[in-house]
Image (cartoon, rainbow, N blue to C red; front, side, top):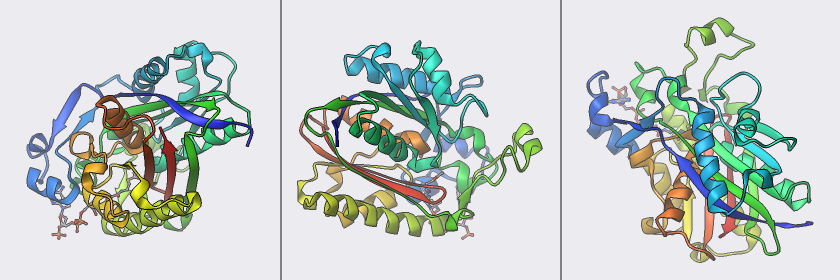
Length: 323
Ligand code: ACO
């Protein structure tokens, strides 16, 4: 390893419009009770017409840069995790680079759905570790509401829009202690948007690219894979779960979050939970929750924090960070 990598700044953004479960009762055969008891969600934010993923990413990115005390021109790598890119190309990372007035550094998107932020962080960590980068901007941003069938109550109640960002910089002492990412395409059909540019372009044009999910199977798999992922991160660092200060989990379902906290024997007041307010914002969920807990003072310098996430693919990962 040439250099250690530390998180030096965080930022996030949520669209102004809030859609509550109660409001969803008006157009969907569902109830606040059902949604809250099955998922832990009370409300989600929804991007306005004409508000796109890069708009959300830009606000979160500028906040992260500011909180690190850096300028846009200090950045030498941009990685954006998103499932809901503004355009087929250029990548959202290139659009963001242009907005930030940065020229020449590598900028690219990473697609691992809800595990996307863990994948993007893994890339930044390795770029910095090898000396290829010294100041990486990592963003998770989604307008997931655009790939939901708003008549399908089994999926549309679960997701929301948002963005989170961090700055990762080369440092003398490690902040990122280890990173672990995985995928298994065997399960590609259990959680997917089954159309794309190459297979069904007309459906895309008609706005009929919808998220489909076998909820029960995904639930079982998420609990098992995330349980293994947190054990993997502990074992590879030779540390005991009692040394963990905070778990910042992917916000997909409060029951999954509680199952992982139980596996870590971590009390829920050491777990950052935003799902009630944000729903599942896919690649944005971990950096959004992290930013919330850094800004409200819960996560402090020196704390050991585990990030974990699970998404379509299946993809999953975990990371141990010392703040
Ligand atoms: N309102 C009311 N009833 C509903 C709703 C709703 N919104 N949605 C489904 N139901 C009904 C179903 O039709 C079913 O009715 P039936 O028994 O008459 O057939 C009943 O409620 C039970 O549905 P289940 O699917 O059994 O509910 P479950 O307890 O499994 O909870 C949930 C569903 C919340 C989706 C859960 O399975 C889950 O969280 N799965 C994992 C999601 C996840 O982790 N995703 C990973 C990341 S996402 C990504 O990568 C994009």
